[in-house]
Amino acid sequence: MREVITEGIRGIVFKKLITEVELEAPPDFKIKKSIIEYRQDPFTDLWVRISVERAMRPRQVPLTPPEVESWKRKDYDEKCPFCTVERSTPKYPPHILEEGRLIEKSQYLFPNLYPFAKYHAVVTLTPKHFKEYQELTTEEWYHALHLSIEYFRKISTRDREVRYFTINLNYLAPAGASILHPHLQLVADVKLGNYTALLLQKYREYRSKWGTDLIQDLVESEEKLGERFLWRGKLVTWIVAYAPWIPGEIIGTAQVSDIRELSDSEVRYLAEDIKNLLNPYRQAVKTDSINVSMYSLPGTDLPLLIRIGARKPLQPYYTNDRGFMEVLHQEPITDILPENLTKTLRELRKQ
Ligand SMILES: [Zn+2]
Image (cartoon, rainbow, N blue to C red; front, side):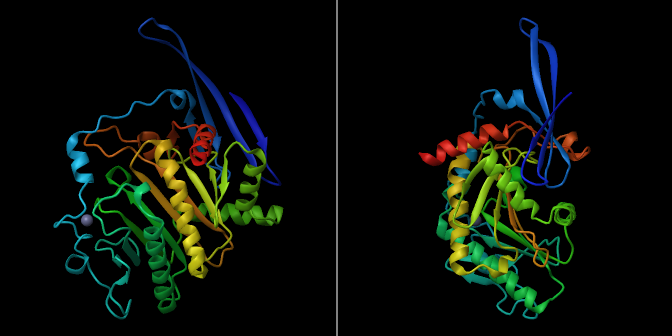
């Protein structure tokens, strides 16, 4: 295997191993070569793989049966709990959240009926039963994020143990959503998740060795190298992940650690930055299903981090994107070359 090391600034190193696989491919059984890249994630030191040859191949647009289109075009569904929030969704008891639910414009925040954390809430992103993610307006993002932050402020004032905040999105069933109606999921926790624990450990090790910020140094390195740097928004700087954990992984960072400290105008900038990324992103990755997580770990200095990735498009039958390598080996394989995605997104943004 060939090792390629690219130096960023200070302690940032982009490391990859490249190998070539040969086989005799039908119909003529001529030699076909595939290149596989093993890349080390600068945040966690974990390895991922990219099958470059697959990424270079033109993508076929999947045939979507008509019933999928009809689910998607509904503005209101009588049976959907998020279309009928007042009668169908739970409320917090007053000792947790006085208001029971939080409401802003036509968006609601309420507890998740099936929580997996002490504080696990849902925010509707839009009153409409269905929209594609790039159709969500800046206003809708703003109110949903504003409600989320309001919730984090309120519950952490009452419960001082709660320290870690994440805003998450499973957009459509292939991304893990059980309800089609677009919604954010908020988790306020006393314990770090596996990813954030590992990231924080590396972040602290980096700081004690180099005296600087791992995430800022990565962003500066990417800006200097240019291959995966997207753009600086009003609040968020976007890059394409060097070692993607999920196809088309985008990383965003902002110069704030505690999301509860964002002013209203900064929340608006955050909403605009997300909206302005998702428009070209939808065209570039050609899928209507995505995951998003925003991590805010107050008291750790870690800047606000956003990760976005593409999942399979919504359709009744498809091959899942998580196989044994992802599920049992903890080594994700993706087929979108980060440097190609960067070029595409930059081009689309100009249009
Ligand atoms: Zn609905």
